[in-house]
Amino acid sequence: MTRIPVIIVMGFCSTLVLADTDRGVDLYNQGKYAEAQSELAKTVESNPDDARARRFLGLALVEQHKPGEAQEHLTKANDLDPSGDSKLALARMYIEQKDFDKAEALLKDAQGEDLNYVRGLLQLNRQQNKEAAASLESYLQDHPNHPYAHYYAGLAYNGAKRPDKMLTQFEMFIRLKPDAPEAKKVRAVLTTGH
Picture 1 (spheres, rainbow, N blue to C red):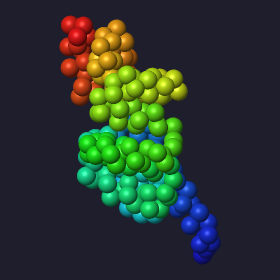
Picture 2 (cartoon, rainbow, N blue to C red; picture 1 turned 45 degrees about the horizontal axis):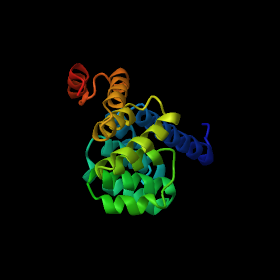
Picture 3 (cartoon, one colour; picture 1 turned 90 degrees about the vertical axis):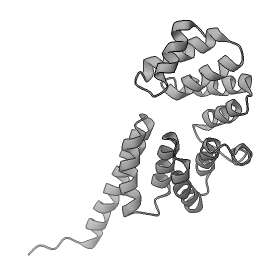
Picture 4 (tube, helix red, strand yellow; picture 1 turned 180 degrees about the vertical axis):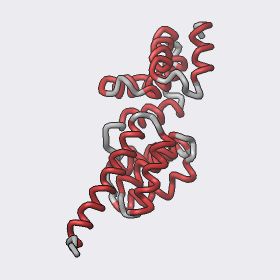
């Protein structure tokens, strides 16, 4: 009978968990939030101390408008890895919960590639439309295929009384995410021009 060394088995299992985390993160980045949630929940169940899996699981829940469910995972991710990325994820959750003061406080120590996106969401929710549009446009320079950055930029331009830029952003949103829940309203705006 052949014995497989325990170290090899443990290494294989950790590789599988990493692969599941990466797959979940890829699904999240593709905007497939329910699928990402499912994949990352399995990872967190098998490895509850995986801060990255918890962070992206929490973010997937936030994007599905489930910030209450996300809070446990994002708080634990921050406990495990109190990095700027964890602070950014918590700030995103607090924006969804409409706790803008907590979000703003966290953004001071936040970092990560989505910083301008989250900052733009905070500014939009505070009706700082010009600032929100600028933050979202800055984010779109590096992430031109992020549908919701276009959507929120469109809302910011609407609030800033810039219908030309609003329509451009909404057109990109529809092109990138034609089946989004917001698509029907956006199409109506595109048809009427306001």
